[in-house]
Structures are given as structure tokens and as C-alpha cells.
Amino acid sequence: MSSPSTPVRIGVIGFGQWGPNHVRNFSMIDGTEVVRVCDASDTRLKAAQKLFRSVQVTKNAADITGAADIDAVVIATPTGTHYALVKAALEAGKDVLCEKPLARTSAECRELMELAAKHDRILMVGHVFLYNSGVLHLKVDLDRGELGRIYYMDAVRTNLGPVRTDVGAIFDLASHDISIFNFLLGAQPLEVSATGNCVLQKNVEDVGFLTLYYPGNVVCHAHTSWLNPRKVRQLTIVGDHKMAVWDDMNNLEPIRYYDKGVTADHYASFGEFHMILRDGQITIPKVKLSEPLMKQDAEFADCVRTRRTPASDARMGLAVVLAMEAALTSLKNRGQAAKVAAV
Image (cartoon, rainbow, N blue to C red):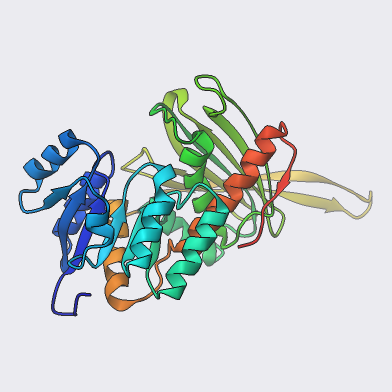
């Protein structure tokens, strides 16, 4: 393993959509060095060599997971390959950053989490929105009670594509929103109700509507679809003091706070009440934007060096998969609520 005076040597498995970004980031982060890239495609390996001339390439994942000259492994491959690759890397004594979801089933996630603990390895899951400047800003304000008691959250994550074949829209897209809900609320859902439709492929949902029930009577809803004409990335949070809207597509003003609410006005003489709407100012906080993936990769590198637990650790990855499993169970039962197992 690397010492404090030597760089963390990294191998990246998968050079498709996210792999090149990881290689770029770790090539720029102080104290890290990308040693080797693995991909099954000759075309992608040629692209890796062209973009990063000092990086070695291979088509054999074992040249990374089992290599003596590599300290940490980044896995950016299809979901179905995660379990075997993460397991091989952990058993070889490597720290691991794996793209979300951690694995296809909660049983696989739990095994990997326990394996990482057994070997005293860092296992981080790429729930990148936990490193988004807007989400982090909301987390600070929610923790200090800026919005008051939270009533509900509503997330929309839609676009036309990319259509996947290995997992449906719930595993692909709703995993982002579930990780955000869990992070902001500091909890995991108790139950999930889900409906949706499989249009383009059999048994692969293109659209999902999830309702998640959290402790404290907080309800969260997520609309996810890769079969939609509009690319939307929005989250609405409603509290008893203020309301907030986060628009990840708005780089200038991603967050707006609304000093709006409803209060009950009691009339002692009549023993009745009516609701009074409060319509106050709209506040636009200054949010310093940065690249979430760079923040995530920088934290992984720091965790490898300091041995601290990352925010997006294996427990977070397991909690998200548990919620998605319950959602898929509910989907099969046409929306009947399914309990979420505890981490």
C-alpha cells in the first residue's frame, strides 16, 4: 500500500461513460496516480491510451483487482458485474469505489459491506449527488431547522434516454433520489409504494412513480423516467416554516427558498378554525457550484489515506438497494406498499 509520501495508485475498471471522468479526476487530484485502465472493448482501450498516454491498459480485470502495484480500485462497469469485481478487489486487499448501485441485490451488498469490514478496507459507493453543492447546501439548512418540520419531498428525474438493458429506471434513476432523501433526512424509508410501466423492453420499467414513507410521518415521492421529452432534475421540499426548490439544471440559481406556509387560525367563540395562507419572500441563496464527481473522487482518495469512512459508504449503498428492492416488489404488486428491511 502507499505511504503518506507516495501517491495512491489507482486502477479503473470500465472506460465507458464514467470511467474516463474518474481517470481524469484522479490524474488531477494531488497524491493520486492512475496506473492501469481495464475495459472489454479494444476501441475504448485505444481511446484511453490516446487520452492518457502514461496509463497502462488491459482487458483482464484481474490485472487491476489482483495487482501488487495498485492500492485502490474504481469500478465503473454495468451493475451486474459490480458484485464479482468488488469482491475480488476487497479480497485482494484493495480499497474500492464502485459506481451505484453497489450490487443488484441487498444480499450481495450486505456481503460486500461485511467483507470490507473484515479486511479493513474502504468501500465507497458512487452516489454522486451526496457531493452536489445544492444538496449539501440543503443538508446544512435542514439540519439547522431552516425549513422547520419537514412534511414531504417531491423529486422529478426525467429525460429521453439513455435507455438501459441491465436495470430499469428505478435502479438507474430512482437510486439517485433515494440516496438524496436518505441523506437529507438522515434515515431510510420504512415502506415503499411503486407503480410504473415496461414499454420498450419486457420486465424493464421505463418509468417509475415511487412513494416512500420515512420516520416522523415524512412522505417522499420520486418520478423517474427515461421515456420523457423533457430533461428535469428537480426537488421540492415542504416544511412547516419554509419551502425549497432545488433545480439541478439551473447553474445560476439552483436553490430557491419560499417563505410560504399554512397556519390554522382558531376561533374560540365558534369552536372552529380555518386555514390561513402565508405568502412571504423568495430567497435565492448563493451556492458555489463545483463538480460533484471531483468532490466524490477527492473524498475517496482522502479516505484511502486517512482511513476515515466516506459519506457515501457501503451502508448508504445497502440502504438504497434495500429501498429499491422494496420498490420493485411493490411494482410487481401494482403499488401495494412493501416494507423496507433495516440495514
